[in-house]
Image 1 (cartoon, rainbow over the protein chains, first blue to last red):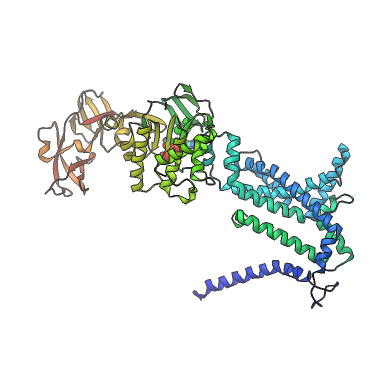
Image 2 (cartoon, rainbow over the protein chains, first blue to last red):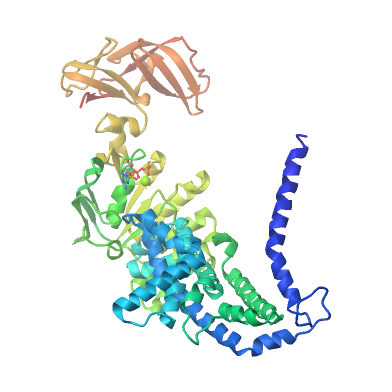
Length: 271
Length: 352
Ligand SMILES: Nc1ncnc2c1ncn2[C@@H]1O[C@H](COP(=O)(O)OP(=O)(O)OP(=O)(O)O)[C@@H](O)[C@H]1O
Ligand SMILES: [Mg+2]
């Protein structure tokens, strides 16, 4: 028993890991499989295989427009998130900020807040702003990007703070001792050292923004549809594998982005 | 290179005084070592010179320039960090070139100066390595080359050898000293390794609890320690507590009367004796202070024998006698005669 129990423990652990992994991968596997079915109404077993749904997805104008918008919003929101989040992380990690722990919780909050709640509150907030200032925020591209920035920031703050925690500040002092002022020191020494955290934050922030549905639903204006919304709208009328094909394309794109990123910075080390 | 002078330098953290009224003047090209027990304020002093800690009071002058209010990047003093602090994302050559770039040295001049600095520390050919691809000793030398390349006015070393193994430490010690002499660098090195300090320094500064206890050469510190702390910190001393009863007379706590230097003022005092100044056996004949002592413990150290003796139940002391053929170490409880000259002991007033 005493010899058997560590091994038993390992079996249980591996089993649990395999089970969770399967639970995560199963939908992906089904989506992939489904996207190659020939028939329009998904049923098992498939009647045959074809690539027609990929063509359908690639030719669907609302998917293309949604993809372009999601891409734009994702990129801009990520950039703004970095510009706001990196200095915030630096300030939180290095200076005694009044209510510091409270501020960092606040910055991380959008990550744990249910999307619907976040969407509703942003929606109400934007209406209030519009009423108060008469600037048309509601349904504007700016409003959408601002909301998406909100879900990017937690990733930036979390990952950049983590890289700063392991950062040896004496190398900044070394730079200053060699004649570099604070700004040069930041660009030449601090930033390169926390780059893995920043790259990872940009990637995860972008993916989060790109896939966001709940919040966007409240905020898109007429004629402005993100890809997840376009997919949802399509699903209201049809359930053919076009959606599966579009999803697979997205999964592949994100997967490729991850692999490419991982070549430059080991994601497993920062996340 | 330049002179460096520190006057009335003080740093306090709340009620705690880390560095207290430190005054040091370092001549051009001098190698000064700051020595003292852990927590005595050595690093704090060095970091104030480099500009990383603002002094509470006092001033720092490099050459003719008062740098007290200047930020670190304008002080032009090369600091070698204890942890080396190399830039991990830059190659050796980029690390060394960094200071040159910051000081706007023209591109064409940088290559040769980097090569020269690397040659000085004997790392030619390591240009394209990253710090993680170097051994500790090599990293240490890159850190030195990086500081040297920008031709600093003063070189500051904070325990630069403490991460090296014993053998490498001996080698690098010599290398640094030779380089410093060759370049005529005004240098302050911090260490708490006494041997390192004694072998490298032109002059030493002994610090304790934030204060300078004594500044002097090795010989001055060893032969004329300014106070009881220095007498115990530099080399070894036997201490006998007691009082000066009259000029030139000292009585131990155990009631033994001794003669000592006449200058000592009457009052509670401590007599410090260097172990090698105490004669044993026949050699003690004719000395003014002669006592019979009981051996408590003797250790064989090769060139020397260390002997711990008791004069009475209050007064214990350490002797060292040179080993010679045929000498056997005394056994515990054996009685031996010891003696010393009146000027062998140094008297420090107690209670100060
Ligand atoms: N930021 C600080 N706040 C409060 N006290 C400090 C601070 N920095 C240093 N000290 C105290 O000042 C004293 C001197 O520190 P310092 O680092 O100069 O010692 P040191 O002589 O270099 O010691 P070591 O040989 O251990 O490196 C120490 O007692 C330390 O606890
Ligand atoms: Mg120190």
